[in-house]
Length: 122
Image (cartoon, rainbow, N blue to C red; front, side, top):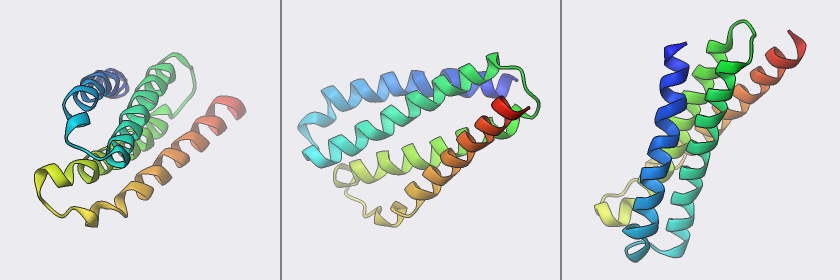
């Protein structure tokens, strides 16, 4: 359970930090499109951190699999978006990360489907 709680707390914490970073520092350096993408990564990290905390409160077996899909999905989805958004600042071509974002999204979708199945039908 500590795994779920850890990421349930660390994701919102990072969301607040990265959100402030984006709003105050990146706003001057990124295009509007890149900044919007960065904010999407922040939002999804927050949502899934909160979902992990909610997951700790709902009694059902095998919640670890939902958590694993949420954590891996959030890391792949949000981190790939963050790096793609700031690649112009880093002066590194990170376009190869593009396919990682939908893989992370797929992990998130699978996590939500498992959550639904386990929470409703268990």
